[in-house]
Amino acid sequence: MSGVEYWQEINKASEKVTSLMYSFWRMYSDWGNWQFWVLLLFLLGPLIVLLMKLDRKRTLEILFYGYTVHMLWTYTDLALIRQGFIDHYYFLMPILPQGLGITASLIPVSFMLVYQYCIKHEQNFFVWTAGLSAVIAFGFAPIEKVTGFITIGKGLTIVHLFFIDIMISVVAYGMTNFFVKFYMARK
Figure 1: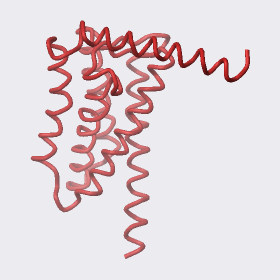
Figure 2: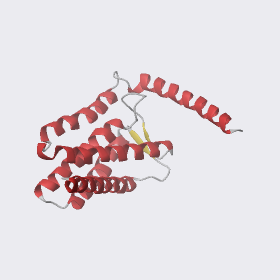
Figure 3: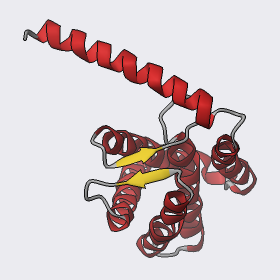
């Protein structure tokens, strides 16, 4: 099979998957289902809290950190989904990433608030990050599993999610510090 033929097969399979995702969404995950409203709450609730609690003096720094957490978690989640390690059974819209409410709002905002707290009160960021990662991985993820929002398989465990949370938050922290120092050096 040539490269062009492979891509034709991939495109056919992709169209079939897209059609199935739309059908599933209409039957089990659209606004007529309670899961949709929970996911919308996961998306909007943390953003509202962030608007009320965000330190206006360091807005760009904190938002950059959160944006980095969001992007890293979204790409990680997409890779985990593609490899079959995790599945999000409910989603806001079929055209959006499946874990959007979690990876775009709940996790980043949680880490942003911890980051903000640590820099404002001179607390150990790594200790607080480990604590938040434990709450998310060992508290929140099992609730998602029990309620049927996600499945975790193929050897991926809650412990892996804990370390992924830590790794992503530390990488985002390093990137944020790099750009803050880069910005301050230019002043």
